[in-house]
Picture 1 (cartoon, rainbow, N blue to C red):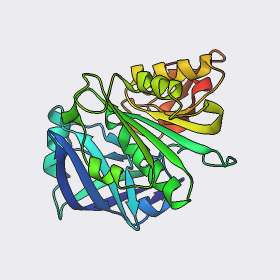
Picture 2 (picture 1 turned 180 degrees about the vertical axis):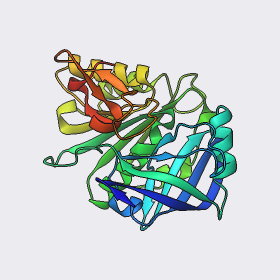
Picture 3 (picture 1 turned 135 degrees about the vertical axis):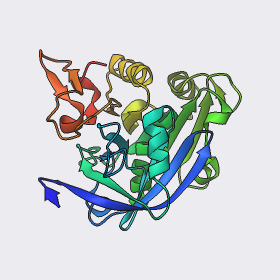
Length: 269
């Protein structure tokens, strides 16, 4: 069924793969969701079954990749809800899904090179954006940071894409030793990443990481698009549970309805 610009569907699970310890890539098949979605949008998945829904709240996941009517989500099994989700999302089963939800990345009006910065599982929406720009033939640079080498997955896939890829780890176990902001600043100093006005910049990851990147860029006179991560119970702006403060004036914005993608100049982290 269609309600506004999103759909409620029963999506068939095609596959589930553990890409690293307790992190899963799931491919689902949809009627409309995949084909009507844009990079940066998300879905809300019902956790539970038709007889007893527990927990009640749906779980939001970025759409990480699209192939025709199929799409990928990536999730971390961290508690009872995601443990139940893993049991639900088995090949051949169906999941109740709302989507595509929210506003995606703004891709209009610039022929600049693209700089995509991902922290942790922020790589999920960054992957979809990367694939979009590759398909458009636009020169793209990706920085991906994690705490440890073991937190990365599918690195061969990213290394084989037509992009410039930078990897960082907090403990130096792989790539640059430090976080993504420290790596960005280092690569600017050594000119492997050029002046920021050459790029449209996007950042997705834990809030402290996005805050650090955004505040650094703003202090240098630049901005970026960020995709905020927050619990979104309804996904359509009804419950008001995902409010964030506006940066420029009093008031708030809803991550699910006004975002999840914002210009960094519009929100307080």
